[in-house]
Length: 595
Image (tube, rainbow, N blue to C red; front, side):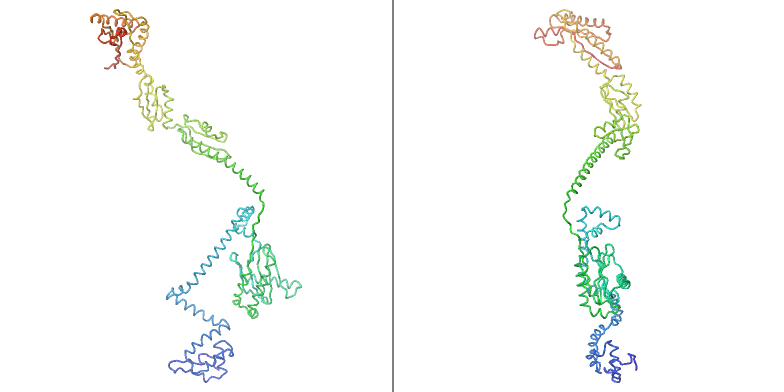
């Protein structure tokens, strides 16, 4: 018998009038074998197809109608047709993408969008649940212990919170074929680290076989639970399969009912697949909803407790911390105020500040003329015992310090003001003895930092005294008896005071290298002739000059003038006015010697 399918029959082509060749020559048993090989099914399942195949006049259109039904029947038998079509479909998809990539993107667009949104929503929901749980326990008394545990174990605080508030959590579910011990399907929580599910299923089967072999137990019995630390393994057995759940914590007994319901529904839905299982696990994907229903979890609910003692302790700690913070902040503010004053003082340069063992260490440079830092400490209310200072001496060139250094060297009188500007120029204003002025012009050069001495506004104090003596002399008046050169009663006392003033002005003028000329002017009233009045005024002036000469005054600097009645003191309207006109007055003229 020729078993080559290429030689069994040839299809209709335009050149042979649409007739199938060689089919009419085949025996019936060979034709049935050909059909079985082609379609992969028993001949009894092709009753409806036989009529079409027996039709020797079959057209291409008939084959197109026959092919989909044949593919469906073949796919129900095994996966050979699917595996054969994989490479062809892959090449077709690759060719389609190469020609136009928009075709597939438009086809998948209605699926990708909802799937992406659902995945994002699920991830956000899980994140918010974890965040809420973490926040609820972040300030609880247990949180401090959990934070220490998280640091010790290297886990995150949120993970520790979930573990410590967990009552139970079913992390993984294994569906295992009871007879072979092979894994049929496996589901697990997303936040659980994945293990090799086949290896876990094999280990569970090995443990169960070990127990059966080592101890006298019936073969129908199965392992129901296994505990290791925080993990518990629950096993729920059915006739053909068992469910093994990996549980963290202490699960309630009601969870057994969930496991039992799941294994019952799986047996009800997949009983045929379980009986015919020979290693293919794909049909058991449909068991995932029943297995996922077993992934339950439960956390502890916060209990209302009386934290009176805890809050009291917390309050005391808060008061202690607040008190310590208050004094610490106040100390810090006082220190900052002290440092600010130090830095603002001329002649003080702060280089370094440190805090060690509750004390403040300050070092820098200080001019000897600068303010004492201990005075500033008392002003800021800092404890001097807590401030350790180290100052190196140096000479400051700041204007204020230069002014103080200059005043200390020159020692000016109270009538003199000294001021040094930023360019080092010394300005002196006021009145001072001529001797001090001459000395200051020599000594200012010995002050480091001074560049110039401006003394144009500094006047000798003798000039002021000279002006005062001149004013005293010019306001002095000596009155005489009418018609005589004799003094009125009481006028003799004025002569002594007058002579001292004249002697003083002459001495001051000499020290200032100035010339002084004093006019002694004699006056009369209008009584008598003018000739007589001139003679009388001359006699009165001469009497004064004679007295001054007796007092040792150089008469070369005195000049007598007889004015008679020409320059009256007051108009002679009454007797008192005439009395004031009978007098001797003085006028002082001061000039430089070179004039």
